[in-house]
Length: 253
Image 1: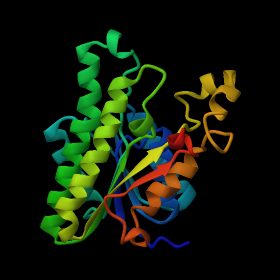
Image 2: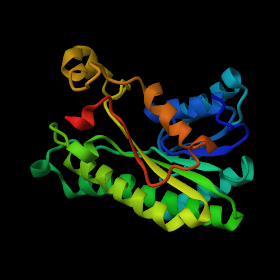
Image 3: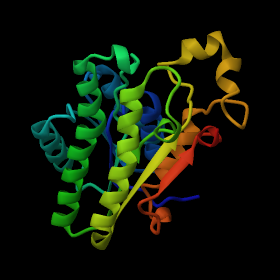
């Protein structure tokens, strides 16, 4: 299916690795001009942008920002508009996971999780809405949540799960606020994915992870990314305020 994304300018936060990287690659394959936001992986982001050109002939931009900082977010958007053009869609993918269970979680770790997952997402969304309104154009915002927002975790991720649940409420409320402006806001709820962060644990005991899905396997990042990319396109023009479960049935457990 042609998603009509050719030459659309799309921002992906935390786009240098994991799910974000796959979203970036599929957007580039669709012909979009992709801004790859990074905070600490400049070399990785630069390499990815270079690969977008060589593999897909797509224009990209590696752009630094700590999205939890207001000035960084504004500067990032200014740079993207200057170098790629006016923004058509944003995917809020950047996230931080604090692993200790609640009883052992430090306040600093808790705040870091909130700063990136909620405050950062809010700052990016606010800037996006302001720019869409200034441009007087419609646009798309896609927020990456998690199936853990609905069912919690059994592995000590209470702060992470709280922020991912907060994203769902924020997505719905923002969709109500900006629908009149022609801005679509949706959330994606991924299940377990095979990424470099958890690859070693999955490889050590695949059955433990596979049985958590109704489909008997964990997802490839492409299976989640394709849904996020669809929600950046006019093919999803009548979807807003939605929370799309892409968990392989984990959210039903």
